[in-house]
Structures are given as C-alpha cells and as structure tokens.
Image: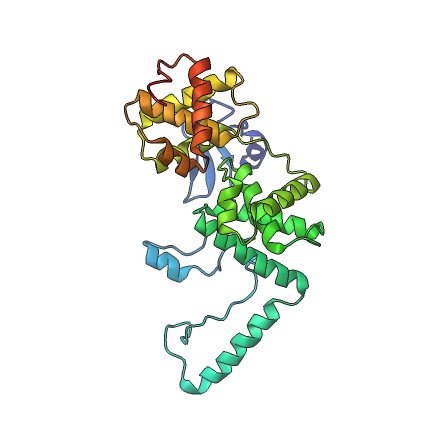
Length: 316
C-alpha cells in the first residue's frame, strides 16, 4: 500500500491509527501525520496554516505580523476600512514634516466622511458607540458586546428600528445578549447606563425578541448568584449554601411568579446567617436592586416552607 493510498483511510476519525489504535502525532519538519507506535503515515503534504516567519518574543511577533485587527461587529463597517491615525508619525515612527501635516489633516477629514456613506451606516455608527459605552459601564466582556451588536444589526436589517429610538433598541439588544450568555443584568441596571427609561427598553426588548425569534429562556435566581456573592464579599461556602437553598426553593415551587433577584437576595441573606457572615438586608437590597420588603417577604417564604434551621422572629 502506497503513502497516497494510506491518506484516504488511515484516520479512524478520532486521531488514532487504524492499524494499532495508538495516537497519531504531527511531524512539523516533514509535514506528516505519523503513528507514534508503528510508524504508519496517516497523511502527508500537510499545509501549515501559520505564518511563514518566526518570532521568538512578543515584540518580534508584533513587528512582523502583517495583518490588521480582526473583523468586529462593534464597528459599523466591521473594521474592514482603512484608518488614518491621528498621530503625526509615519510607519517608522518618525514625525511627519510640517509641510505635509496640512495635507494629512485634509486626508483624515475626507476619510472620516467617506467611511459613513448613508443613513444606515450613520445609524449603526451612533448605535454601536452607545452599545460600547453601556457595555463598558456595566463591565461586560467582549464576546457579549459582539453578540449585542449582531442582534442590533439583525434588527436594522429587518427594519425594526423605524418608529423606535436608537438608544432604546441598542439597550434592548444589550439586555438580550446578557440573557443569552446567562450573565443577566436587570432592566434597572441597563436603564441606569442607558439614555432611555426602563419601560421603553422593556417594550423594545419584547418587540425585537418576538420579531427576531430569539427564544430567550426566563432568568433564574441562580444566574445572579455569583455576581451578588462577589459584590457582597461572601465566602465560597456561603455561595454553595445559597445555591442549595435556591434549588430547594425551585423544587417546592417557591420561585414561580417571583422575581429572580428577590429570591436570590433572600437565599443569600439566609445563607449569610447560616455561615455567620451576616449582611444586613439593606446592603443586600442595594446590591440586588430590590427593596428590603421584598427580601423580607421572600425570606419569610423560605423559612416557612424549607427546613433551614433559622428562627423567623429572631431574624426579622
């Protein structure tokens, strides 16, 4: 059997040799996939997808790379257009002569005008900058920002923005992305950093989620647990007990019809008492953005229906 014939059927599907069953390794010098045990050549003439140059440290890698920034949904043209830097320096780091600065200034001005060509791009430019601002204030990660930008772009393509404020739909897209990544933020938290009120964000969210068929599951109390525990500076043990309390409450049906943040706050309050790391209801209410009355009501329901070993009279 020749090497070329082996190329067709030497892989068993999970990077194991079909002859002896041992793992197959890649020989970088020869470009071959070879069995470590019997020496069977599974594949030859492998194409290296990496760069043809070598770098031995981060500085060399930065200097030798010839590609630009990756494509992103957070820029209206997806980052594919050319940018003229505002620094008056050339590619070698030398200052641009004074004679050429006026010309470079005019080029920058025309470049900024050319990048935004129509109303849709102007809409995206404003909305995506708003998304980035809100996500930065909420300290959200990059992949979640990309997801929110993609949702907003889909809404623009489906002509869902007409008759609604750009800020409202952008805030609703960010809220939907938080729900999708199970890093939920409440409407109150989104409204604090947005330039529209909570009701408009809620209306826009319900509309785009229906039209775009996002199929978002309702938020659960356990989704907020890690963030609230971290902000209240409680221990890992307290988090585990809170998680058990929430699961017990879900099994008994105590979370049905209740706000997830209120149930989560009450479980944290109960766990802090059990772990002797007690936090006041006021502090927990401020972190979870619910009222102290809500925490007391949810806490009373947990005590009455679950055997937690906490006296209701003593802790109210």
